[in-house]
Image (cartoon, rainbow, N blue to C red):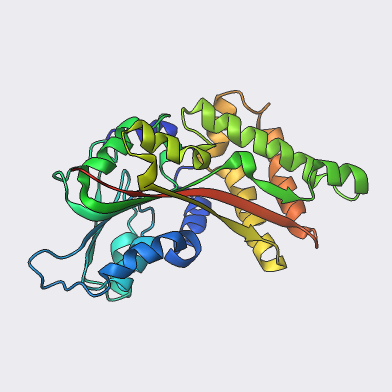
Amino acid sequence: MTDPQDKTYIHGHHPSVLTSHSSRTLANSAAYLLPYLEPYKASSSSSSSPTRILDAGCGPGTITCDIAALLPGAQVTGIDYLLQETCAPLAASRGLTNVHFQESDICKLPFPNDSFDVVHVHQVLQHLPTPPTRAVAELLRVCKSGGVIAVREADFGAFTFHPSGADALARTVTTAGSTLDRWREVYIATARAAGGDPFAGRKLQRWFMDAGVQRADIVCSASCWTYSTSEERRWWGVMWAERTLKSSFAEQAVRNGVVAGEDELKQLAAAWEAWAAEEDGWLMVPSGEVVVRVRKD
């Protein structure tokens, strides 16, 4: 199916990408949503109007399944523009019967107005043509009045690591930091060349206000993924070294002239591996979050 995200999603679906996405859970990637799900815990699937929840851009379905497990009386729908084959088996392996998955375009959702009590979006809007006006309008359309829309997006402009370029120059221990500075430049330029917005995390409030939401109906927050132990560094560093060389990110960086060629990609991949070996290596990936209370009075 044709979707705007086909052109702007720079990661693709290489196994290294899916490894990263499959590590995401309700606890480590959507904890800000938990208080808003609490009122629905007592809902019954036998009700004439059961709670309905949409996970838009569900990826491998890990967060979707966590929501379904937390709210067994709710009906949970996970959608993605290219649905992963692992979604349904994951739900089956967890014994979840209140969740289903389907391929859908977030910019043209196949649901009636006011279909869902809760709409969740994780790391999706940054990959759409910016600003993601059509997607935001669709999220508001399908959410019921009184319901909530929860969105979390990374902000690569605030992506922070140690050693940084300045640290490496001062210590003369490693060049990984300075090369990772270059990796961040390459990532941001590649995302922008594809039409997305790598600074999406800081713009969520503005995008919903532009769609007509009152500022008083938006709650903003932020949270981070942090990698610092030897196991965490190795997992993230090796994974990103592989993504830098083999995922769609590599193809687009070369095609759009962001990097000089494969040799520079190899240098960036080596930098990730060098960072992973640093005993004091530390990395923070920040994301902006909004919870929007939908009002249609």
